[in-house]
Length: 502
Ligand SMILES: [Zn+2]
Image 1 (cartoon, rainbow, N blue to C red):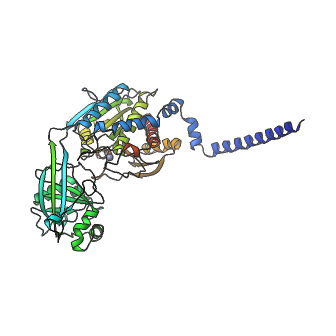
Image 2: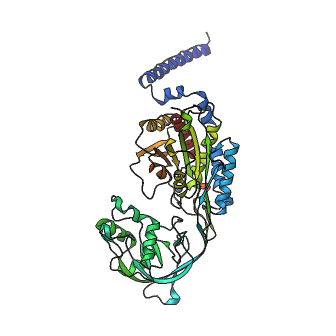
Image 3: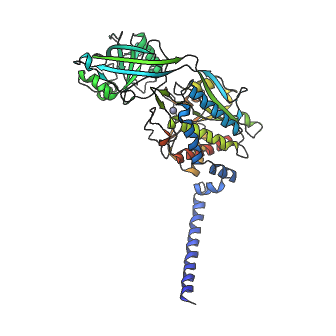
C-alpha cells in the first residue's frame, strides 16, 4: 500500500466514524424530540414546501414598491390615488384566479369624505416678541394640520388643557373654569388613567375635536414628540386642528417655567386636571379642499374551500391598503404602513390560489380602505359582509410588517387550535420573537379590532421594526426589508393553511 492509500483509508475510516456518530445523534434527536423542527420539516407535504419556496422576497418587495409608488399618491381613501391602487389590486386578484366576493366584483364601495391640505402656515407670537418678530414654524418638522382640518385663517391665544377631556360624569374636566372661546387649546393625546376604560371614548380624536369646538375653540393643537400625518377625524366647519412638536411646545410653555415632557409626566402622575391660559398667540392659516362625496373601497377576493360542507367557513387575511395621501406637496408613501401588509396579503393570495389541493375551508383576502381614518373600511365590511358574519371563523391582520427581521404575533387567546396553528407554522420558519394575547381592543387598534368586536378570533402580525418614520414622508420603500416581507408571508401562509385545512 502506498502512503497515499493508507492516508485515504484512514480518512475513509474517519469519515465513516463521523457519519456513524452523526447518525446516532440525528436518530436520538428524532426520538427524543419528535415534535422538533427537524421532524416537522420531514412531515411537511411537498406541495406545501413548493408553495413556500415560490414566495419570493423580490416579488413581495415589488408589490410593496408599486403600492407605495408616487402613482398612487399615498393612497388616501376617497382620493384618486387610492381608487387607482384599488383597481390595480382588483386586477391582480382577477389575474391570480381569485373569485370576486361581491356580485359587482372585487370592490366594495362605501362613503368616504376626505380633505387635502394644500397650504399651511403657523407662527407664534411669544411673550415679549414684537409683531414683526414672530416665530415661524416649519411645516411637517414643527407643525402639521390634522388632515381633516377645514380651511381657515385664525389667530388667538393659547390655553393648555391637559388631555383635552371634559367628562364631568367621570369627575374629570380639563376645561373646568377656563374660557377657551376664540382661542387655541393645547393638549396631549391620552387620558388621565389608561387603565380606566371609561375614558376610552374621550381619547377618540373625533370626540376630542367636537368638545373643543363646542367650548368655542378655534382649533385644537396636539403636542406630540414630532408632528405626523393623521386623517382620523371629521371636518368641522371653521375648525383648524393641528399637531406641534414638543420642541415648539417648549417655547410656548417657557413662560410657565416648565417643558412639555415634565408637564405630561405631572398629568400622568397626579391624574388631576392641570390647565392654564398662556400669553403666547398662535396664528394658523390653512388652505384645504374638502371632498364630501369621496368614495372608499375594500378589495375582496376569495379562494373557495375544497370541502363541500366546510367551504362555507371563511378564514380572512386582511391588511389596510390606505395611508395618509399627499399634502403640502409631500407624499406620505406609507411603505411600511401599510404597503407592506398589503403586499404580504397579496403574496399569500397568489400562493394560495396556485396551491393544489386547496384547503378545506374558504380563504378571503381583503385590502381595507379607511383604516387611517378610524377603521372605516373594516367597520363597513363587518356591517355589510358578503355572507353571514358568523361564518367568518378567524381574521389575520397585517399592519407594518416591512421593517426588521422578526415577527410579533398578537392573538386571541382562544381557540387553542388557532394558537397551535401559528406555533406549528413557526416550527418550520422560526420567525416569531414575541407573542401576546389580545385582551381587548381600544381606539388605537388596527382592522382586526372590527372583527374582534364581532367575536371573531384574530391574529395580528407585526414586524419588530423600528418603524422609524411612522406617518411621515420618510416611510419609503427604501426602509423595507424584502426578506422580512417574504418570511412574514410564509409564516402566515402556513398558519392559515393549518387553520383552514383542519
Ligand atoms: Zn397602519
